[in-house]
Amino acid sequence: MDLEGPEPMYRQIAAELERRIDAGRYAPNRPIPSETALCEEFGVGRNTARAAVRLLAEKGRIVTVKGKGSYVRADGGADR
Image (cartoon, rainbow, N blue to C red; front, side, top):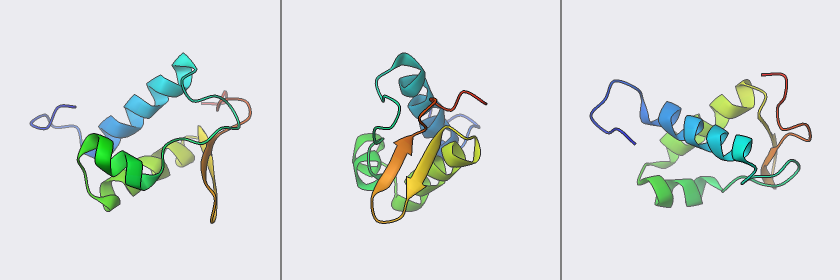
């Protein structure tokens, strides 16, 4: 993560999560880390973690199920 660069942290986190999805670290139909886990891993606040997850959902890479968490789309978000 580049804390001093111009790219917002939530975008950097989303890009890292996308790399992990593409590499198969997070498999289709399996959860990505929770917002709490993202906060701890990347040292950010909940709003930043939430924005990263929201960006991935907007890009079609994940789906969020209320009360359960966020999951890699079954097709891995192939329609990027």
